[in-house]
Image 1 (tube, rainbow, N blue to C red):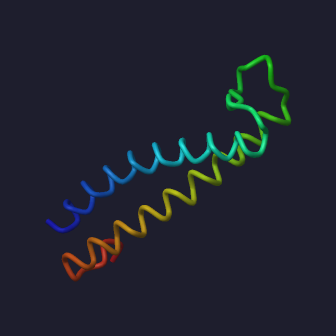
Image 2: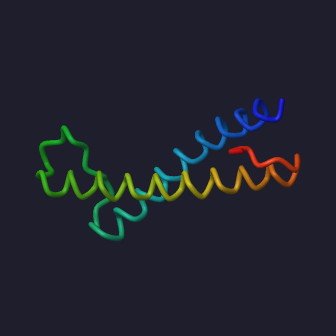
Length: 87
């Protein structure tokens, strides 16, 4: 039952994490590149360099945000149940 509860928390935290990382990436891109729009791989106005750098930055931000949210969720479940969800 505890694993089922954590899966629900994990699913919700995944959605929230994706949304937050998207917002953070857009703000970081504005600061770094000075542009409001983020490069899409299929966009003709951006070259290979910008597209690949943007993808790398976006991936790093997503990874950090997801790890932070997953860790906070695991600690919350541990506090509530006394069991670490990964064990």
